[in-house]
Image 1 (cartoon, rainbow, N blue to C red):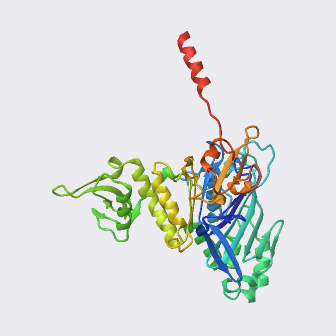
Image 2: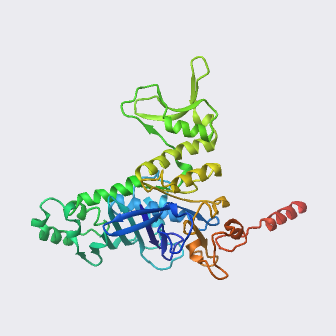
Image 3: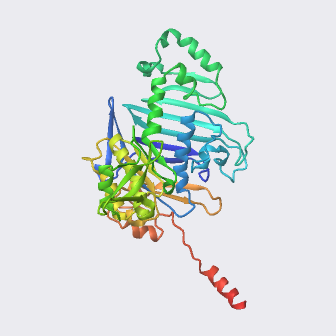
Length: 440
């Protein structure tokens, strides 16, 4: 369960961004959508969903991009560029794209995350020197790094490396660590690599591969960050597939039928030497049956839904956090509202899954659908071009700017009560074009 994500000097977020999925105080209504995890004597609460609003180019996608970039850096364990050019989030592989492009100095870039997994509260952060925007030749360096488990500081890295409460992870330390602790600590301190994260390298090999595996597993499998939802092309893989075979997944096909398909069914066709299968539209009523590539027959919205639905299922079955850029694009709002309500449903969302997405559709600005602390905004300053982020709950409930539960959030948003909206008028452009056209 994700509780909080922070970043600073990531693209348009020059100042610190704090994206919280912890309930704000004194928020009434939709209490069933609050998730609870008990660790020892403490109870931690998280929000089951959040929706992000803001005009184009305000920085909404940068929030998701920062999460994806953080995840990518941690999993590869270093701040060197990655050779994978297929990643739609270029900043995750070419780190010179990260620093704010208007920053005249070389301010560091920082990331921090707080989440719960396997009965542990994990807090991990690091800051790095990447130079200025597009400075490819800058000598990169990890400036700081900290790991805290269940409120106990495990290690901190600044000018050097310090260890604190290793006894707090006693059961996760490598075998015979106690007998070799002094040597391991000394070796770790003397072998820090400026471009590598200690967590994924020295700490993993000499201190606790088990703890790092738990953290990596959550990031890799449960922190599902989709930077560009329109770039998803789901390819199924089956163990020991038979060539020229068709596989119909019952749950996915039922969901697609409810959503709307133009064929009799959808299935994955295996046709080749590998175990990859691609989505096809199936027709039962012809004499021999027929199958054609789904993208040739189904609507774009249906294809997009079919590609996204397994991620929703995975999140709900495994307690994952699904973060998607424009999750609602080409999907009818009623289908989206039903999925949101499923994440809010305590009887179904028993594994504490979470859904976060950005949108331009105002239909989700609904007090009966979202808590005020689940509605997020991003706006960009016209002069500095820096982005800022806040929640509807930040307005409070009293005074002229206060927001009460029974208010019309959608109406108030469009009359600029909450900010994060931009008045756009193309009329002067077309007036000039028409004027020039007459002159010609």
